[in-house]
Image (cartoon, rainbow, N blue to C red):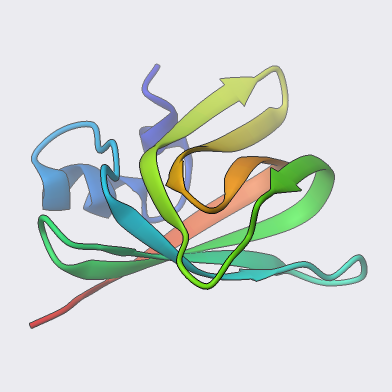
Length: 112
């Protein structure tokens, strides 16, 4: 099963990209981590301009490196591993790594 169909808002992401997204040359704008509440990751795409906010609950693991003044990724991959969802950011410049959580939802806001 396509992992995008298993998260709230994932169907809208698939519709926006007319298929499975890769987020090539997208920029990570914000990473918010909170051990007692929701965490989020905000990404802005350039090829089809929009801002995507991934809200994560019950983060179980993460590994992040190289956060800088500009954080361009080559792709963002969503995978489901047993009961855990994993967002992996492959870098172009800046941030790289993954975040694993029990629940992930995504909200999409088109940009002009």
